[in-house]
Image (tube, rainbow, N blue to C red; front, side):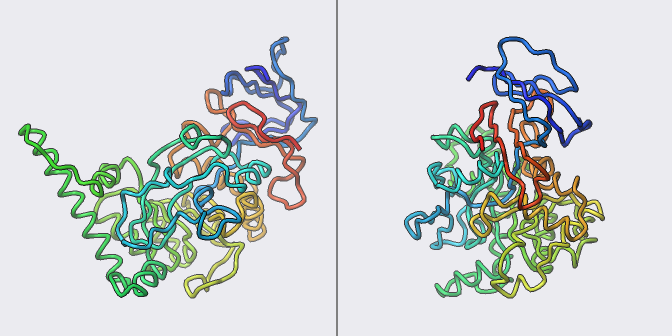
Length: 387
């Protein structure tokens, strides 16, 4: 395969300014270099004539556990919850992800090109998520952004895990208190470190605290597992108190407190909705949540929480939200540009624009419908899947 590729005769949804009923995309060295109605062809390009198929940015899942919770593996491949300490900011998803997890192949066959994957919700602070491409041999080569977010969790999960170990937290009060204490410690640590540097004094580095500095410095968000309305509001309360960035992940009862979420200014990553109501927190789970939030002006992404819902069914999840009134355009945004913006990788992916990575999904119909097939998946300008 050469370094140049031309996709032609495409119905293009760019997720940027202009769409094209019959357009072309020129790719050079893994980047998009031209988009238009008609692009002149030289002998250098590999031509991909899609014959009227729908071409869109590669699909992005803003919250999952692919590679860390491996398919067919049981305990041996379960590396997302370190259930021995409720405060583990120093853990990195990067060290747990196996690119040979068979789920990556399925994801690519569904047009999923980028994911945000990381720790589960057993701990109050679980460690850092990483944004990666879905194709590669070495995880280090797949990274888009690392660290990308710091996982925190509210509600049933941390209190259930540590109540079973007869240690804190066993209540929502304790979960919030442990998070606050750790954020206080991180702020104090930052000041002490800066003072020591000014005075040219020795400063003993603290592994846990170092991991939290990007949060305190607003370089990465807290990624808050929160289902119930009161837990969502606790996440907002603490993020405001410490002046840090936040994403509201799951946001199951977001429709109940939509005005508060809008007022907070924080984005929502909604899901997994196409799953069983396995616990009390999920009683009000609904595919109408994205529409309610979008109508108020909240930035919304839709997620699978893979393996809760398999990665490749993310477009179907977005489609089920359209069944409850979300527009086609907003549903596409929720799995492309909105997801990219919320997780901080929109400089590279999420829309088809000149200069961005050539991550492209091509479908034989409406990608949000279950009967539609993904024809091609292109990552960094290379065809990694062809139906």
